[in-house]
Image (tube, rainbow, N blue to C red; front, top):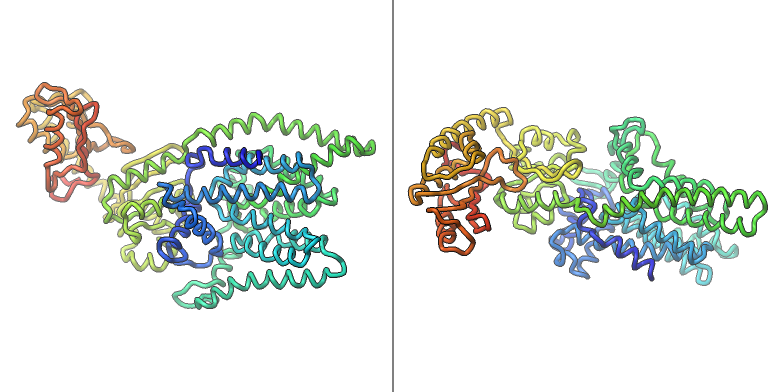
Length: 622
């Protein structure tokens, strides 16, 4: 219980802040949300890229607990679900360790390593189907060790393992381990019978997925339809390769670098323990699995999923604890050669602990204190506050559910991956990228632009209007220009010149009190024409206006669409004063092309904000 409590606290603490939301987890959560809210298997056409059981489990959890209603950010509902899955996995790993002969202390060590390693924490906090499959795999291994009620245990192991595979298909790679554990555990007299029954049950579970596709008429390829065969072919052969390890810019190199930076000590310890465990009978099957999975990563021309390592984590932790336990026993009871081996392993373990402590402290501090998701949250808030609900957006899937829930039409929130791959989206976009108004770029989207021609065209013909965060966490909101970026650049120059002319006239008005920056912004054409027009009218009413033009959060200030009135008629505009209320109401009463998005009283004065785009009737057009 203390182990689970510690694991739960570390996993949950600042779970919304770190790591930053990513596209994959947004996709799985959106598919789960579609089940509970749209009555559909996915928020787009389901095309058999993964079996749906993983997000069906997410949907079931959310439905039972009200997770989608309790969180403002939909991905957090999914993270809560994988938190529960991780705690179950931690408990099952402890039990598995006990079943293969680890002491309570060593089983606890394996569970803590699995739960608290920065490498594990990064992936356990992310909504990956692998996290949901892991407890099923561990449960299958525990059931496969059943000896008292062997037939029931083996049948249960086969069914549970089938659920693991239908949750994440890569877990099929663990079939040899599950089969070997069953074979070794089976009574010789009934081995053939029990294994035959278990195999039949596993086949039946897998056949259920095939039958599902067949009933929908989507088993084999056909014109204008998805199929299970196409989905399998995509995963096995047609998916783009992760590249070569020797290429530092390849996806596989970036993936390895990410894993290594998170926890190189656990990676080295896990591989070393696996090599040693090959010579320890009770740990050998798990060592073979880990090493086979490692070798499998390097197959030529293959695709390596970033969360692939999740399946290795529990077994690597188990082997580190198991080899440590073996070393202790050799020190106490082994021969001189055995003691020498035990001493060598213990020295390596001490070195690993000494090295890991400062590395873990730094990494865990980041997980517990940093807010890496802030740029995504800020970009999402900017969209919800500034973009009309009728506009069409191309986005990272991490914010799909949240934007739909905020009022955007489902068909107007386009997951970038579908712009070039989903027939329904393509049919709904006769002009392709030109039919969209904004594109929101994240690290995920910036990684694969050339693979998606329409997305790439949208990027090439857009410009940043708001940006949040730095480095890999940067989220840019870009305005798309259907006429092309060259025509937009020419038009922007004319608009800026027009605003500069209007601003120069206003700057001469003796009623305005401007600091040097505000005066320069006016004469440089950086102030929205609607603000210039509004101030011209307001200066005719007040003989003294102290104004400035603060930028909207996230915008670079090239065009200011906010005006702050700090003083009017010689009186400071303090919150709650009659003067402040009168100024606020005046701005709120502006209508037509000059209507404001908002006018609020602040400690610094009355702040009026105009929409991100001026209506066509405002000259010069913006």
